[in-house]
Image (cartoon, rainbow, N blue to C red):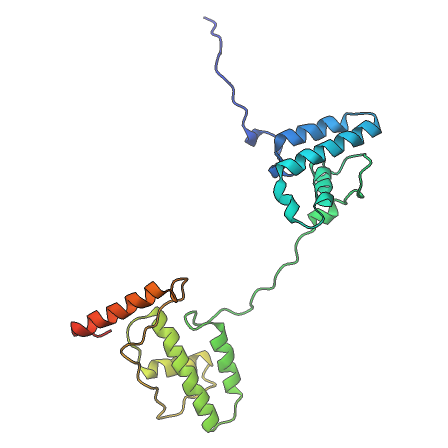
Length: 224
């Protein structure tokens, strides 16, 4: 028995031609297609100006750009696939201007050996390796180790021995830098707070909460 198919066939955008400028929609594309079918050049140019006006209404944020009228006409040519013969107030753009590949940004050549310290620590260590031995270099190593301990405690809340930091310095320098024997760091205060960087670190509420936590820990005999 013959049957009649009365189902509704949906027309999805994924099955249609890809839009060169999706922000203007498919109706503008249809206008441009009709525009190219107009034989009279004067009428074709007049219709192009009307389409540009519609594009301006559909995409009002274009006004925030410098020389936005010129950009609208460029967009019209892009929608038309750069195949448009009209009298426009601006010269027709060249397709290569919009298809040029961006200049690649060179990436860092070497990997960071210890991400919790960062690349700048490695650069500082490289500079220290070139410094002459003496009290100045020892003071610089002590300052560097204190900063590295702070960075270490941001990501690891447990205490860290001075020897661990000194060992990391020597490893990061590929053992070119030797930490002087007997070097020690100042003790970390019990009230010191090493928090990960965040948007709320400096907020009054966050500071108040940390102070309340410290007082609670002291009352209950807890160490941080």
